[in-house]
Image (cartoon, rainbow, N blue to C red; front, top):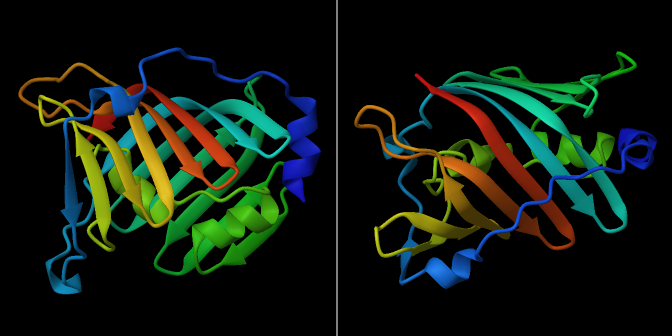
Length: 199
């Protein structure tokens, strides 16, 4: 399993101090799933960032590049030194994960594939929306908002997503999340976006 091969080699992680999202929340909104015919796809984006993962006693930190299009996703994971860890591709044919050893694995969804190969699950179906400060319309969700109606916490599909920092808004665009903390049982994922490009 790649998770156990890579994680012991890397001890660094992203450490950021900030007020908890719960301190900023002033109201909670409950949403129901939208009819599949009315679901709007997540906007296309291209971003660069850093990630830190803790799953029990195992830790990993590094960087990532993610290109999201309506019909496909491509995510590249790197060590802090820039060495490739994995390439995750999702398109109409399914999901493929290629390791640093050029081993290819296939599945129908990203969560089960990353959990099997990397040792932790990547919730791509919801994350494409959460990265933009929105809930996924596919399932029910709870959202905590601050006094500016900005989302500070989303609870959806067993995940808790905390938004502790937003990037400055660009030319009449809605501010986009810069720091996200994802919690799922014993799994903690911190994402820090260094460069946002929304199509």
